[in-house]
Amino acid sequence: MYANVRRKSPETDIVAHKFALQRRVWPANLRARMRGFPDPIAYPGVSTQRAAPAPPESAMIFETLSRTGHEQVVFCHNADAGLKAIIAIHNTVLGPALGGTRMWNYASDEEALNDVLRLSRGMTYKAAVSGLNLGGGKAVIWGDPNKDKSEALFRAFGRFVNSLNGRYITAEDVGIDVNDMEYVLKETEFVTGVHQVHGGSGDPSPFTAYGTLQGLMAAMNVKHGHEEVGKLSFAVQGVGHVGMEFVKLLRERGAKVYVTDINQKAVARAVEEFGCEAVGLDEIYDVPADVFSPTALGGTLNEKTIDRIKAGIICGAANNQLATDAIGDELHRRGVLYAPDYAVNAGGLMNVSLEIDGYNRERAMRMMRTIYYNLGRIFEISARDNIPTYKAADRMAEERIVAIGKVKLPHMGNSAPRFLGRMRNG
Ligand code: NAD
Image (cartoon, rainbow, N blue to C red; front, side):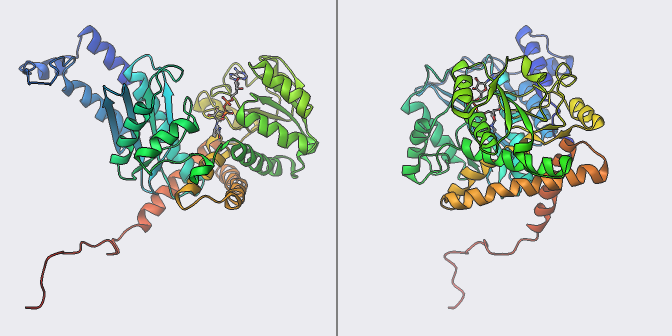
């Protein structure tokens, strides 16, 4: 049921349909349906600026949702607060959908919708493969994080999150920081990643880095039969929040580490503080390292780069590292051990998830160790079935969703209706 939901991008359909709407060259069947659609009626206080009529577009959206498997997509609008946001809940079989809110100046509403659909689906897989009792969801706020932030915007957004009554729990993502989340927290309890003073877990990056180290050790065990990080060399692409913590952990264990980043200050810090060797942005693909660690952006494992990467292990924290599934297939064919990104970088999600039951740092550190075992299991499935590791991770996630979904049946009666107001005696 879930096997066909991943990486089949909904982009093409939605974007193509938008172009059709803009040029008013609707497909014949849609044009036929549009005939007889009433003109906007002027109600007091209600805008008559109804641009494109809804039915054709929503028809395409439902087609997309049925392909991606999303349960619910909520469009949130508050003109006074300047809020345009979308919350996408992909799958809640395992639990409430937890995923961050991204603030980005999208070029169009299609781009925002595509992004939230793609990201929320990824969260379902990440939570499932990590053994968490969480579903997958994500939100996007359309706006410029440098100009458009306000208390009203985040409180308006928080009210929409609250209206979902815990089906969606939010957190920080690109463009959002802990201060923004404090405004969201004023309107809803369904928010994680808040400041420690509010019982939150703070910055997840050190946990993500530590979790990545666990995944790395599982990969080393398979590839080299040992977990002595100091015996290997590393090419780390990106030394931001996670990357810097990651190189620190590698250097503490005595590894040789090459780093690159577009931010020269970050590179200088990695060299001066942690003793890494700086290389150019493009040069990182050619260095003679045992492990290549994408820790900046997605898509850097592509047809132009994989011929240049000499490493036998690819393990880093960046999301969506494989440009396409075919790259994952090719790495498998070449015998390069790829540690699937969403399984390796789940430390941040694990950490914020603990806020739901009351955050505890010790528990969080213990939980990171599960990444080692999860990766071990993924590598086992990959070897047993001779399939690429990214497919093994997908399979593990999908099997868990299906199995746990069945455990939840039949209904056990503990949330039975109370029949208030009925009298059985007299
Ligand atoms: P960040 O923005 O702090 O760091 C990213 C770094 O990559 C920056 O220093 C940036 O200058 C650099 N960079 C950008 N383009 C580059 C390029 N072409 N070449 C080299 N360097 C480049 O982000 P982060 O929080 O450290 O996250 C890094 C990656 O890990 C992202 O893909 C993120 O989605 C993923 N991730 C992060 C967390 C977390 O806890 N922060 C959790 C899961 C996944």
